[in-house]
Image (tube, rainbow, N blue to C red; front, side, top):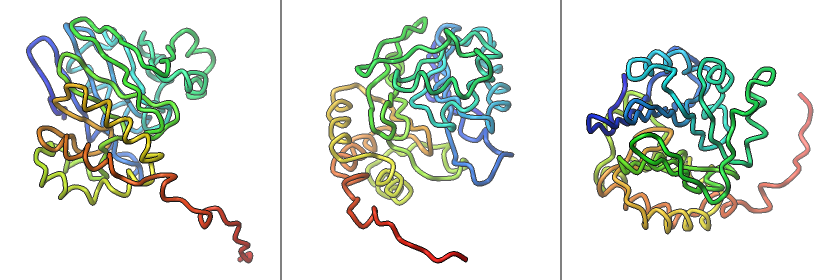
Amino acid sequence: MAIELFNDGKHICLMFNDLGKGGSDEAVQANQFLIVSDGEGALIDPSGNLTYNNLVLELQKHIPKKQLKYLFASHQDPDIIGALDKWLFSTECQLYVSSLWSRFVPHFCNLNRADGRITGIPDEGMAIHLRDTTVYAVPAHFLHAEGNFQFYDSKSKILFSGDMGASMVDAHEISEPIKTKDEFYAQLHSMSGFHKRYMVSNKVCRFWVNMVRQMEVQMLVPQHGRYLVGEAIPAFLDWIENLQCGVDLFTQEHYRFRLQSRT
């Protein structure tokens, strides 16, 4: 079932949070997103083979596959774009992904299926027009991938934030957004460990926060877990701005060769 994030009758943003059910219980929960603007569609982080069949069924309730114009991938991980071969085979979509990964993601595909179908996003980002809106590829490098982008829909004012803001929760917990500062801090136990390990450093977190504070963001919608609205957004920005993470937390003790006896 789709979660409707925005709908003005002409422009719709949908979130799918439970399409991986029936797959491996060990697979990380992942959200997928569909923007339909005046009859033209874009999928953001459409995920891998565990979700592909269910996502196609849900997609066709809202737009014919032939009207799907773009795939947007925040980075190259399999939970982002692992089913690329199937999408390129069954649609005429163009994939937008960091230029850093544009020569790596064809390894998800058979034969020459990716030839001419991938647009590399430059490090500074770019604007992509979709009928009644413009989707901006927003730099989010090292959060967590080396070449990483988030996608901002100028019509709905939604920032599809990839791994930033992610929470490690079950799909059934995701139907409602995190709205208040108190609710954000109550959810922090499901976010803290993930951000400490997957975000590269406090330095890039601060750069990202400085950028987002200059944007008009009505919703911050990550690829994992619950999304944020209202006062939960500045609460998250304040927290991540001061978080020590990634290489900040590593010492020489993490780089020791430890000889172990064979069993």
